Image 1 (spheres, rainbow, N blue to C red):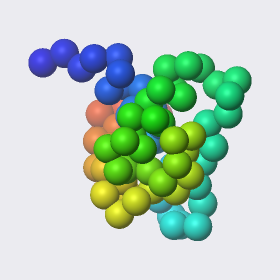
Image 2: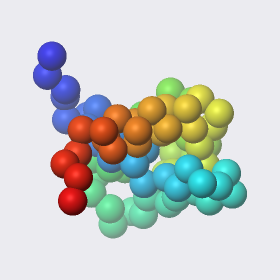
Image 3: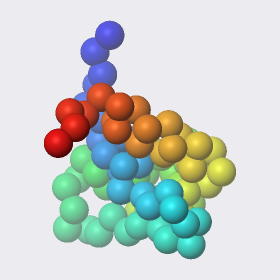
Image 4: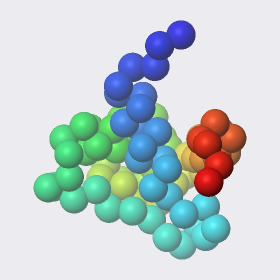
Length: 79
């Protein structure tokens, strides 16, 4: 199963969130890569984040980010 670049970009956005607090969001600035801006918009449309350019994670988004960050932690080589 190949993962399309759009999904990888969405994963990259989810990895930017700090899961230790619900009071910290992110902002994808206008000068960020277009692919990241588009990924944030898709995550917003899916109901995972509160703003088209980042914002906070929704409850569903927090769950998705937890799973995403956990999976990446498992598959990345340990230093």
